[in-house]
Structures are given as structure tokens and as C-alpha cells.
Length: 182
Image 1 (cartoon, rainbow, N blue to C red):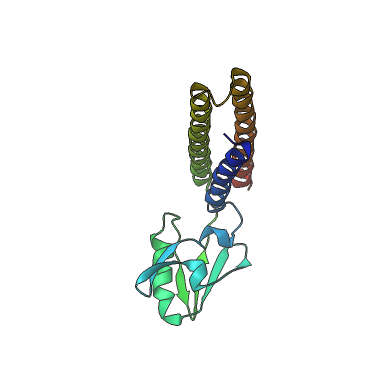
Image 2: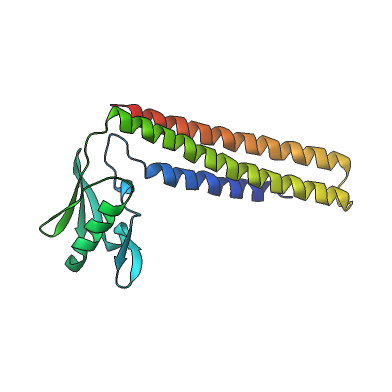
């Protein structure tokens, strides 16, 4: 039972949630929105960011400057097929991705999705917590630690888990605010 190890595992859950939330669209375009979309290229799956550079020329567009022009249609197709409901256009030697203004209804859908993702992250944290609690109980049962150590260990785990749960909630609330901001 190691609190540093617990913090590392919980940090990974937090980072994963951050990356998931970064892919959700808000009122402002960001390259993070499309950079991890999988594209069939060179007989394998690659991400958009591996195949070109993504820029934000104005508040309504993302532009992908593709390094290999033969992949323009593949990249546009992958972005179009993603669950982001975007309609990319091949424009010369770039893929232009117009971002329509978010409707109130779509904003509410995104807020619900944020709540779902935060809840999934909390479930992961609960699972990690449970594993550490079992480790403490096992160490106590095998007489590796005494009763005092068992209770202080459990208290420490609860304290760290509570800290990370609060961070998850804060992340979720910030993202919801960002989405609802017109």
C-alpha cells in the first residue's frame, strides 16, 4: 500500500478525463477537437495530427494542412464519419472543417456528455480506491500491518481519493460553463 502509487493511478484517470473533455466542442474551435480522429493511411490507422498540421484561421473554421496530398480525401472522410457531426471540405491542398454555431440543444447534449464522462472517471477512481482498500485489508489479515496502520492507511486513501474526486468535479463544471458560454 503506497500513497504515491495511488496518486499516480488517480492522476492518470484525471489526465484521461482532461483529454476526453478537450475533444468536446465548445463555442471556440480548437485543434484538440479533431487531432485524435483515426484515419486509414498507409495500411494502418493514424491520427489527423500525425498526417498534417491543424490550424485555426478564424472562429468558425479548422484547417488541416496535409503533408501527403494523396490523403486529403481519407482525412476528410474520417472527420466526416466521426461522431462530431462535422462536414469537412477538401479545398485545394487543405481540408477545411467549418464549425457551425452550437445550438442551445446541442450545448445541452454536450453538457450531459460531460456529466457522463466525469461519472465514468469517478467510477474508475472508485475502482482504484477499492483495490487499495483490499490491499490494506489483505496486509492486515496477513499480519503485515497492525490495526492502527490499517485505519490510518484507509484514512489516507480516502483523503487522496476525495481530493481527486473534487478535481474531477471542478474539471467537469469548468467544461460545462465553457460549453454553455455563448
